[in-house]
View 1 (cartoon, protein in one colour):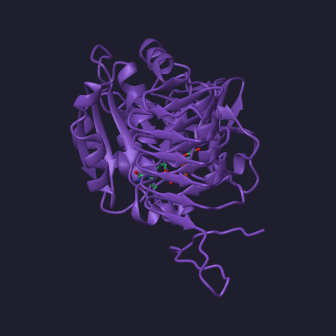
View 2: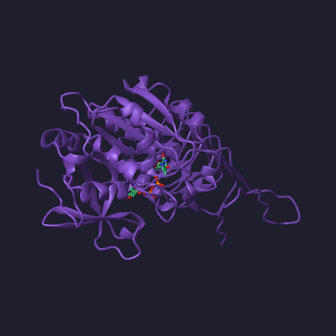
View 3: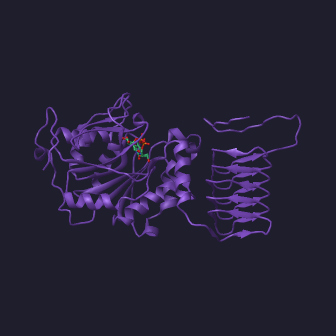
Length: 379
Ligand code: DAU
């Protein structure tokens, strides 16, 4: 075993619980709790993992990636938004997976989520996936590599321009020597992607560490604990596209990226005076009247687009109504209405059942009913 020795390191075997023999398929753990503070007000009422990217909840991409890798016995960590997530995911049968819900009383950190998942995972190896992450090429190749090389843990890393927003890894001769969660002065631009492979040794680590300054049990500290105890933590730098969709701009970028990979299709109604240009997906029951849709874009089930322009990289979810308006590079959630707004709307995330409309009412004024932490930019 190529051990990662650090000062004070001890022999890993002394601490290790018995790893599974690697014959059984791995178990899966998807983290879908947390508060989604960076996406408020959307996440005041909804789970951030259910915001749709190209009209599919982000969480579903993770579930699909797990199942594609042969991981079908999946624990789903949920918090306050449990009910909403249960309604969307059910028992996992839709993906031919078996989903077990694990309630986390409060978002006390990723390592805390691992700790409470121990009764579900037992003595198995497992893959953990953060429910707000999107990994373009899926996780199958990493899972296979982990099964073959049998390290104590495998972490995925990616080069990013703003490493201080993530867990940062320091490598020496291809070995991980140090991990730090959101350091002010990152030692490298290599950050932890939200996919981790673990043996049950991680349970020793999550029990040994203490909360960070922000009051969370950090998975980064737990993996550092593994390193400090001579465990073999294998790094794997990914070259494909990956996104943590925690912030609005990341969400829009993920939407752009996924829309661009989709094929045009039309299961709705498009009248003769409308124009679909490029990759446009019109879902069942959607109606496009006297409008131009320039793809890549998706118009969700039962949505109506009338006398409007929908520009590239826009996702309109189910049951929306867009009338006499222009919209581009945006995501609109279900049952929202944008009516008679002549100024183009762009770079926006519009929540569920939102109404934006022009009125002739006097006095001429802007009138709002906005949730906490909403942001409106006027020109
Ligand atoms: O996306 C990669 C980054 O994810 C890593 O680089 C960081 O090292 C890692 O700490 C994590 O950072 P974030 O600050 O982005 O984690 P976040 O709080 O957004 O939580 C990630 C997912 O886990 C999200 O779907 C919510 C869920 N979660 C989070 C916490 C804190 C839980 O289910 N329970 C929790 O207690």
